[in-house]
Image (tube, rainbow, N blue to C red; front, side, top):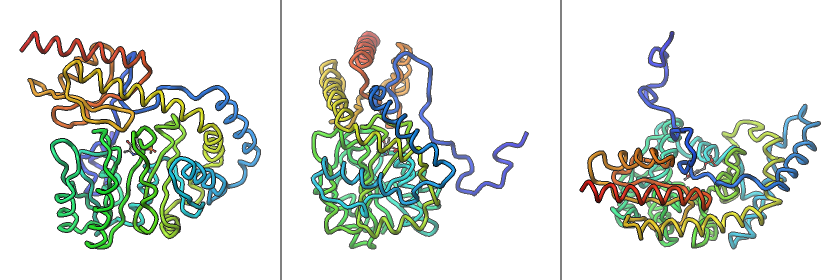
Length: 373
Ligand SMILES: *Cc1c(COP(=O)(O)O)cnc(C)c1O
């Protein structure tokens, strides 16, 4: 049998592993920041109806420019984000990962570089690698905030073509203040000028507001969003961005023709009709997230402030560190995520029952550690 190492794959892919959270068949899975609630019945019906409507025309290519969908997305952003965006400022693709890939194909690539402030979403560096963009790991403070001076210095030193800022950040959960984004944007313009991509995958769960209003007057700023988290539609694969119309023109140079299937567009349009219901689930999840933060602190853990639908907690210093703790919690039937941040683990907010199961396991773990130590 041929092994991957025997194939003439690109040098920078040799010895690398594909992205993927380990999936295990356990009763409670709180490891991938999915929305735990299945789509509501009326939405399921509406999806079936809309897909049936387009099914007859599947002999034709879909709307290449996804105008109806992008109009619906712009309406949603305007309604919830305090902005007035037109359809020409919104672009959609198969998940925000594809949006980011298109942005790096457009603004990164061989001979260019991108910076992110780590720990953060590992797909940014992986997509950079896949597009031949050199990756620069920028600094974060011990409390996982971004120090404006240190970050500005890194941008001035490396002069990256693309700057990523994830807010609320994954896996740490904390949000980045608007003043920091503005300062990094200005630093990036002085250095190059470069594109600044704000990944707002979790913004609907935030205590604060979206950074969309910062787009006005900043033609190199991009805000990326997804239906995978707040909309509870990770299986749909629909991500989008808002930016200056020129950015939307630019990504069309690299997008594959007809990249968004008619079925995807119809399904996403159905979801947009039900945003009010979906955002009610978001309110429940926010309350559960706040409960996880409060109870984990009461139990005795250190917890990073969270504006997302997950919580980072620790610290695990003992033998085996965070990974041993992850294993002990797994043994109690609860799968959470070890993102490789030394001393910390991440748990997604699930249903109240799932969160109770997790909190019981977290309580047992502390008792065990007190007993042993
Ligand atoms: C989950 C996540 C996404 C979502 O990616 P999709 O491709 O839209 O599913 C994007 N950015 C961050 C930071 C995430 O955690």
